Amino acid sequence: MSLAPPASPLPPAGAATDEPVERGSSPGHDAWLRLRQNRLAVFGGCALLVVLVACVVGPWLSPFGYEETRLDLGASAPGLAHWLGTDVLGRDLLVRLLYGGRISLAVGLSATVVALTIGVTYGAVAGFAGDRLDALMMRAVDILYSLPFTIFVILLMVFFGRNIILLFVAIGAVEWLTMARIVRGQVMSLKRMEFIEAAHALGFSRRRVLFRHILPNVLGPIVVYTTLTIPSVMLLEAFLSFLGLGVQPPMSSWGVLIKDGAEKMEEFPWLLLFPGTIFSLTLFSLNFLGDGIRDALDVRSSKD
Amino acid sequence: MSRFLVSRLLQSLLALFLIVTATFFMLRFVPGGPFTAERAVPKEILRNLEAHYGLNQPLYRQYLGYLGSLAHGDFGPSFKYSNRTVNEILADKLPVSLELGSWSLAVALLLGLTLGILAALRRNTWIDYAASAFATTGLCVPTFVVGPLCVLVFAIHFGWFGASGWSLPGDRVLPSLVLGLAYAAPIARLTRGGLLEVLQQDFIRTARAKGASEARVVLKHALRGGLLPVVAYLGPAIANILTGSFVIETIFQIPGLGREFVTSAFNRDYTLVLGTVILYAALLMALNLLADLAQAWMNPRVRLE
Image 1 (cartoon, chains in turn blue, red):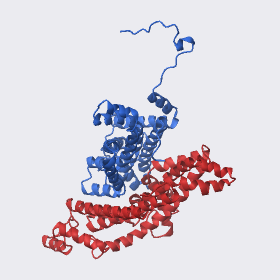
Image 2 (image 1 turned 30 degrees about the horizontal axis):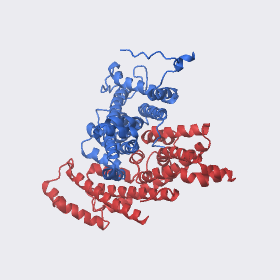
Image 3 (image 1 turned 135 degrees about the vertical axis):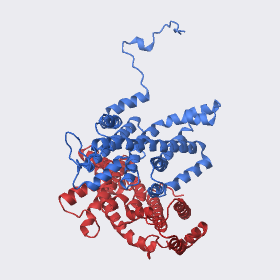
Image 4 (image 1 turned 180 degrees about the vertical axis):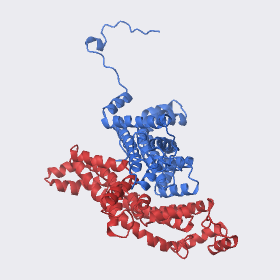
């Protein structure tokens, strides 16, 4: 069905001049363009992509297995056969790095998802409910903030067998608090706006208003804070693994490799240098990308 | 104000009580105990040991007994170090962590504030970029990478300092620097951000218009408001620094509280774990309260209620 406008005595405004019509641009598209201008963010994104692909695909392409020991070779310096050298058991360091990267990245992503789910739901409910429920919920967050969480994570990992699922949960349970605060603040300010009143007036259920109308508008801060949560989660995992509390052998993660490397660094410095470099590089990339997205979406930072 | 203080103290006490209770019962419900060793102790001896430490009593009586002695400031006997009380062990380890923490804090403040202020005043010059590069590096290269690298370069290669230990004055340098650098990075970031925001405000223009020198404008007028985010950050950060860094104390083999805590958890030394947790939590809450008070004093618009 075509709705041709009736012939009007006045030509449409655009047609009067011969200038090309400017194409509309969505806020999301604008943000994408701004992000692409940010060289550090682009570098971070590309480096991250390379690391990700290498960690996922790399171990399959390598002629060495990550557990394949060659005691006769021992720790050998980087060379043609083993590009990054081997560890004291003669295991190829590159494969172990890529394999450990899978675990580190997987922990980073999963624990962030845990933190994200708890934090967003909690913050949104508190902010939307308001009044006494809100006061109660945020008081609880305040108290949780004042707890020595590192200590509790350490205790949890020491006592309950150091398995990797618990690691996700423990880290996620620590990192959701800030997300809850951010989301609550945003929801509080959004729920007074006219379009929310309109949604209420249309008779939508509270659940629908919250999840369909309010939350999509909080997406910016959530995305930004998520990209900044992943590096801090990965740091926490590596920290625990460094103390011998995180990922357990024969599995490996960047934290485990750094710990092993630090023990052997006097004779075999490459065992510390390569894991340390790739771990830091990944954290750099994540931070650059996160800062870039924050600037592109123009979200006020909660960190500085 | 006094109402604020009273309510905060009550709230802290409640939180401490919850922490003690949660930790106490968590410790008891996990498998293993302080006397489960690889070489099994004969049953009779085990029973005697448990009777000696009161571990054969019902759990609720042990709990009440522990709370009772806590009220007297007694953390009980250690289960792993015979003839030593937790109080003695804490008194032994805490000063080491406090000293390491103080040096690190000095490094962090000196470096972080200087870089942050310089970066804000010389915005978008090479000083700003260098400071921001330093801050990002500090955030992305963790202490457990920097620490071993510093040992490798300055202790093993150049031989300037000892690689580990805490007996010589020179042993203080590397750990304090590494720990301090990690905290200098966020301080520099927060200082720059806070200062930039304040410098744009009207009262700064007024101060300049009235002919105040640049140093006076920055140090007297702007810094007070600009440091608010730093003060908020410093509350929990100081608690973390002072009670010892698990990682730094492990790398440099420093006999401080952080290392003791991890060991005691592995040993199931119930009372020592509880004592460390309580000490740490109390310090954290006290410093958070101090940070809130300091913020209210620096910014009259902050209301304490």
